[in-house]
Length: 294
Image (cartoon, rainbow, N blue to C red; front, side, top):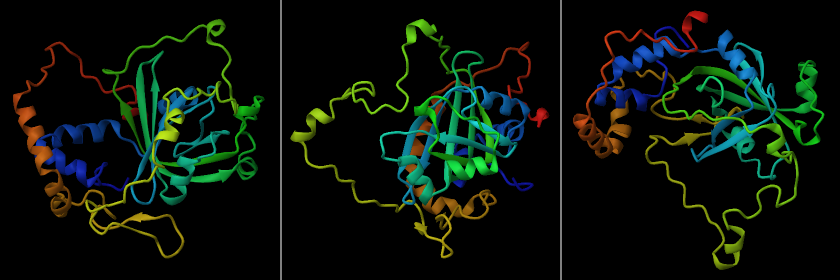
């Protein structure tokens, strides 16, 4: 990121100011937020078998989903680029559709079984056909399982990478292979995909067709706009350009008023909370993904 620019959004900077956490946030930004994947992060990514993915369309409508594969299914191409395959799914293509409108995405990888730690990766993405991807990167593995053969690849330009702390991550254990049962990669069998587990299909005859509520983005001053050169949509209005926005004076007219009641409520709760005090002999902890490895 450019020298002197703070990571994060104008909104989070404003909330930090209101709640008095700016100094603590700056310490986290300084010690833990990178604009690339350092050596430890790359090793961590290379052995993960799953991650959580967040995308949004051009209206700001969000989608959160889950991706999984064998270790190495997420490929680190270099310190600022990674890629992951899109397997055969339910045909909805929600994430890829969102990326086609809005290239911003967020990835959260969590190791529940060994290190009990997480890694956030935020950046810009583009969708690449499998043939094109392999032409540019012939060393990509070819998976022998038909349901794990990539139809598309999502290539991510890393803009932020930082730790998700361990304190609330449960420690899980893997089920032994003989007890797991085979995963039905790529299947169209309804039962093997989970059937109507939540009963949505059973209710289909008793409910009106789904209609999305009218989209309103009053909280985004200026809304969203399509770039005239056919590029991906960009955020318009406050927050576009420099994300630091100096001391965020221009943010309070569209975020401060919107969140005033919420912030007042948060401040009342924090006023009653007792801060945690570290033990005198507690060593300084600089994190699993130490900037000194950068």
